[in-house]
Image (cartoon, rainbow, N blue to C red; front, top):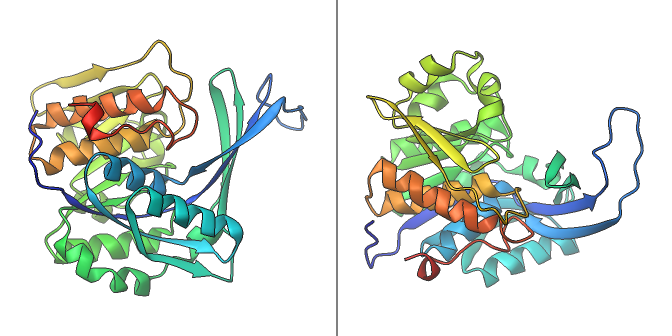
Length: 295
């Protein structure tokens, strides 16, 4: 693989939050109450995860997001600064608290409810304020934990500036053809394809978005269509202890490899490698690897 001495410039526009993990003996079903054995807090939010992930892999990263005017928001911004992420475009709002993801975890399986809170307050003006850095960026990264109208606005602006765009389409939501056609690559979870594309014709979807749609599952496998055949790569570590954040880690690795002009196959392999590392530690950001530890 090729990694030049230049540092890719990446602008990540997305969510930041706290992940509150409740460890239980079972995932509660409807109308059921269970007792947690213990709980832990980790920094999270798909946008912040990708900002930290790409920064650790050598990129110069600006993060555009929104936090509440509260201690948690300050902690999130300090963490991003400590991770060498530029937070000049992380805005504070007094209309919502900082976002929290409530996670119930049992034996490696989990269910998640996200309260976006302040992440819902990201505005078009805040995207406009960052235009100078969007214009100079190698790549723009987006996810689906901010308002859809902001995603559409960002894509339109980035494309008008001739920028490459990557989208991690999670949490799964219906995407219109304009979004799907304008972005340069899409990462999606296998169990959310019908939600994202509005149909379940997997083979047709793969062929329509050849070398563009990369579909993942919880075993750290990635599938895509290269124009000739379906390609499948898997990198599951037997010591995997934490599955949250693997999609963000893959997206970070894929994005960095792409910025260094590697082949699609090598980008997928590198994304899988980065994702396998994050699964070895608790927290979506804790075990994100540094480039020096991978090459």
